[in-house]
Length: 262
Image (spheres, rainbow, N blue to C red):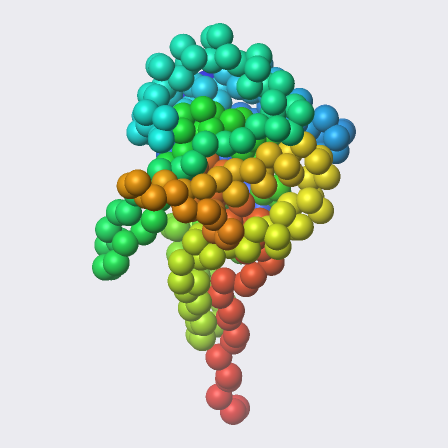
């Protein structure tokens, strides 16, 4: 896997070439997605997710992220050791649609502006599978998102949004409508999300697996909480799925300032 590459702001208003999940080296990023074929959005896409090359790249990325262990207590080395003996059984369950992700571990972290943000930490195994899914789904889904969307996108960052705003100001626009969706990740409707995803990725195996990750229980101390909505931040898939759910929501609206009478 290539070394981390820093995102550079693109020229506002121009389409950037999208190559999957941003840079390797950021917490959820994966460079160089697996080769795509004509049938990569139909049945058989799950096999591409589980291809050896894709999984090895996913494992390398998860290792580079150095994340904490999940509810099973296994770190990356312990998980890799387990996979040497158990992977064939796990892969078979993934292909049959019987794989059940383990619960995610809830962690609350303080927000800079006050309050707390919920993180859901999947096990290393589930992060590996999610990363493998991400590497295949990102190049399929990202080109369908709004050209004016900058959040959790490969090759895009907040500075690009600022550059775009500056270009709008220079073109004569003066009014900005700022919209903040409170606790958006926590309130994502699973049915709406899956419906939108199914339209773009008509592979029943992939859809079934994504739904399983969405429905994974949450462990908070000694309590096990059933999840019926939301995609808590902490897993590789969450930002991509949030963008699927938010599209085609417009994040900001602009209009030209009225001209003075001549």
